[in-house]
Amino acid sequence: MIATNGKDTIGLTLNVWRQAGPDAEGAFETYHLNSVSTHMSFLEMLDVLNEQLLAEGREPVAFDHDCREGICGSCGVVLNGQAHGPDRDTTVCQLHMRRFHDGDTITIEPFRAEAFPVVKDLVVDRSAFDRIIGVGGFVSARTGAAPDANAIPVPKEEADLAMDAASCIGCGACVASCPNAAAMLFVSAKVSHLGRLPQGAPERDERVVAMVQAMDGEGFGNCTNVGECEAACPKGISVGNIARLNRDFVRATIRRR
Image 1 (cartoon, rainbow, N blue to C red):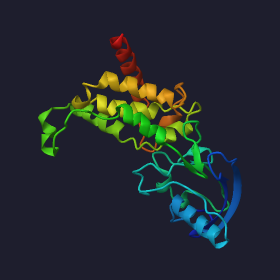
Image 2: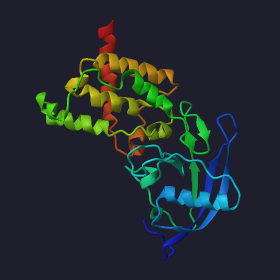
Image 3: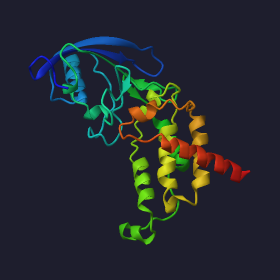
Image 4: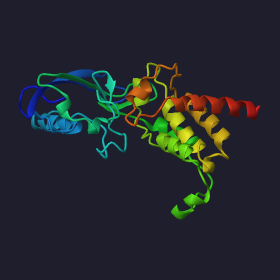
């Protein structure tokens, strides 16, 4: 969509969540921007907002970002109730202001989940994901150098599915969009992309049990097959990975008994 005022700039009203720290009470504050270029990315628009706030002697809005290329996943926020905004398969940093219209009101808030405590404003602590990865999101076997990749044949279908799962960037949109704040899509993607490859097979049972237990220990909710996680995922990770995770977990639990 293109801005409807016939110009390259639009005016916006922004309702932004402001919270000084993890233990502080937060609230929405309203700001107005009059000349936002439709060629800007959403994060560039937030940069403009912060420049305006600094010029007024006010505290800028804290928000997470790094690569600004849809790779790192650190930029996640909720826009008008949608994690990463209105576009499918798109991170906030890749969302452009031409997607909005002159006079629009945009509500911007952090990813909300018990396991993602707010650090400040739009920044949340997603280190729970790191701790889940730390208990099993890796292989212990030596994989060799790049030329050794062809030494173990992998069926193309399995390799493609493994790569699809490996495209997860750990942004947390699946958690923020789930009514139960479940992390099943994230965990299943990490379990699937390793479990489908020969190098990940020896630790397949131990991995799935350890990561599911860590997920539960972090306070994430349970999956009830709503499917919003896949819709919000900027990489389009399939909920089919969750079914595979459940099968692997049941199998591993039975074998351990």
